[in-house]
Image (cartoon, rainbow, N blue to C red; front, side):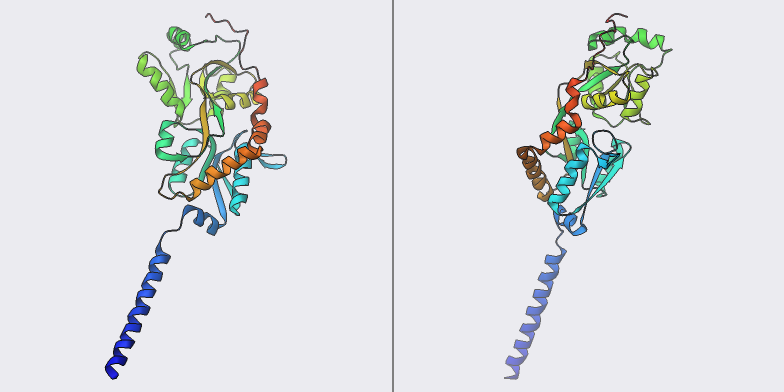
Length: 292
């Protein structure tokens, strides 16, 4: 009888210990990205401070990406924290390090970005454009630019006539042109953003730069002395980006969210609000001659 009592006691101890260990293992399993956001109570969104994605207007925060992010946070049942950056390049490490949950900054689905991060659904499209100042010579295609490049550089005292921002998809586009045309020259400015270079072009301090079509159109409000020389690419999709992982929770909800936004008509309403007027803009300067 005592032997049976001892064995029963040992059995109960072992059973309790096993259950306790199982509980620890369950608790130690990592929580999904979605669970972490809900537990934190805040959706952290990295963005750019510009006229399209996010800005502080007379009535408070505004912007296409801001309004979409606000709707997404509401759907998650959490608060929204917008984290604007001055340059695109600073958003990437913030996402990698877990300082933000999403990048919502009007970024195109370039090959480099898709390889590094996970892209959400496309919600509008842009092309890459060569921009110049009206009243100066306008190249109407790449061939004209290449044929006159050396003369323009000489007139500019040997300085670059085409400059782009660093850490951008523009660099890949121009590098591809350079691979086909060895004499093609451009400069990368690591200390400027797109707005800085567009301003330089409008003031006549820089001959050409490259920007997304939507950004060019919005910048024409501030810098009317900007015009399209020619298109460098076809339309490219714009999307949000999240970290690449085996966790599908946040990605799946983002897919569903954009699907609902499109189906409800809210996405079209927001696009009309922020970029619908762009079609009425006259990008091209008809006064400039196609000859030097």
